[in-house]
Length: 480
Image (cartoon, rainbow, N blue to C red; front, side):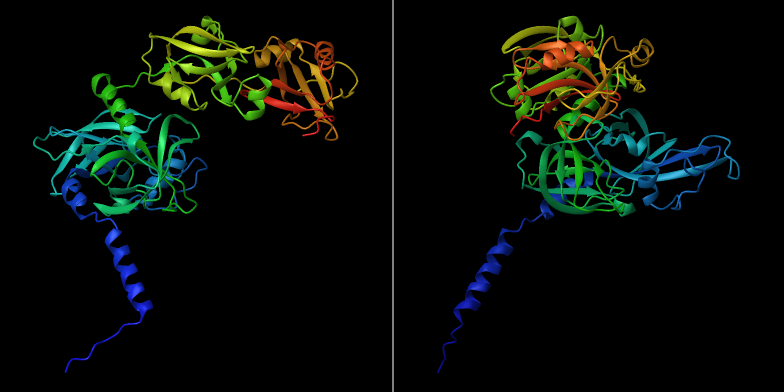
């Protein structure tokens, strides 16, 4: 006689939940089998002449055959020739990853992987090795195109990063620390990330494990399509901390197209310094909501200056496309061919205005203005009603900072004003819903302040070091 076995309800529930969770977990095996062969290992050799060590004359803490050496080398300058106490010539080796984008041997990787290399070696999953030729590199996007002499190679499929969703599964394949064809998985943590000194790339952030050696490898979506090129990690240890950044594949392919045809990348520019439009700034300019890119300054005789764009203008559209955030503008302009004519919609003094700009080209080297020195107050150190002690720029100071006017902030006293102003700032202009003017003297500035009641917010255009910014200043009578 058979006996029925009754399971507790909680055990049935736990078993069902475990089964459901297991069933819903993604399976990456098919993706890896089909796409893994198009991922390559890249090793480079660089001949260092004149010694080894960092800029302080100390040896690197890693052996040059250690894959961690690649990461350390990126953050410390190479030694100057003739440094005493070290060999005059030696080899430096580093590792990275890449992926094949054409059957005749074009390979995409990071610029920092092959930068300065005397020899680039590409190893396929079938153990074949090829010496590669670097067709071009672009440091601004950290993309490089290299070529090996082979045919009939496996090729990756390319996807559309614009269709990626935050939370979507992604897979990285590469050679972390030299372990070839390692597969790691994670999700898309964020899109459109802006990183310091990287204004032209809307990075994809992921928590897939990325380590030194993964650089230049592909980031796949679940369809087996490449959506990004793994480029950077944020780490306090040198290893994975769940913060990795990939260049969207559409950006990378546009770069490689130019590298393939001309060996360099040409980007558009209009010659403006911009900042984000906050709610307070939008209110001060009479804009209905925060949007666009606020122009802090224009390059003299640059494309924007020639088109009549002024400091205080807010760029709302570029060739009909909305500039939702300030970071959108550099990417829009940068992807425009130099010499093209583009229409910009501006917000100026409470109304929209269209201007046509002839797009310039970003030069290879950036000219940086030097900050000026502080001067002595033209009058006794008396603070105005905002608690600011100001001085007028001397002719020598104007020449040094290349300005024709401005007031130097000598001191900000007793918290009498709530703002981000600091000693050493140079006040260039004052802007409100009714006033937009350059500041040329202390008398003029104080007279303008007299037109506002104590509860009013005032927007100032300020030169700080090498940059110009707009800052909101609130007097002691402001209740906010």
